Image 1 (cartoon, helix red, strand yellow):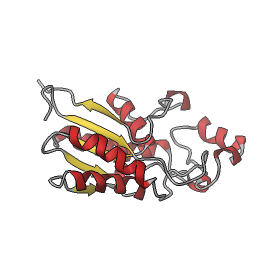
Image 2 (spheres, rainbow, N blue to C red):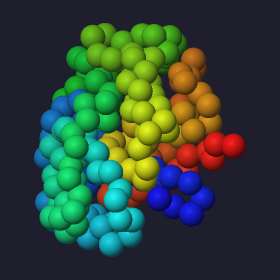
Image 3 (tube, helix red, strand yellow):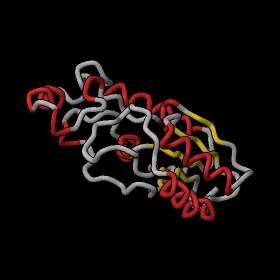
Image 4 (cartoon, one colour):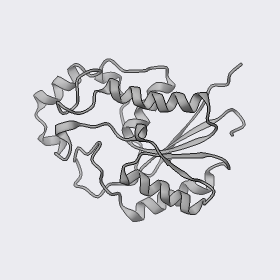
Length: 191
């Protein structure tokens, strides 16, 4: 456990083997093997003893978690479906540029509750499952590493600010964390 309280590490998977600009949220794509190994080698020596290693079950994250566990054999990978990327429904596997502006605006116009891609996941449902994992970490676990996706990283950023679900698309955190990089958050100390 860190000196200032328990810490949550959020590691984004390596680049996927797909065309740039593809919508692939819940699609189970492979990640670049060399970049996956490089990311594991960067983070493995920094992780504290006794950290809990959880991973999205999607291959691009599971491969990175397995690579970390190979470098740190005392860490057992726990796959957690709550850490999977958001499902974009009918948009999955399509270039973002091919999604009709009207479809996208219908989703962002009712950002919390509209299902992405008409039959995917709503932001509220996505935040709910991410919050369940985050709340579990806050209430019990010590230090944890989640090998996950950009959407989960953004959701946890909101949760750390006390936002359980953004109502407007403008409230969703902008920017991407680079593939194979991580963020850390400390749990608030209880008095």
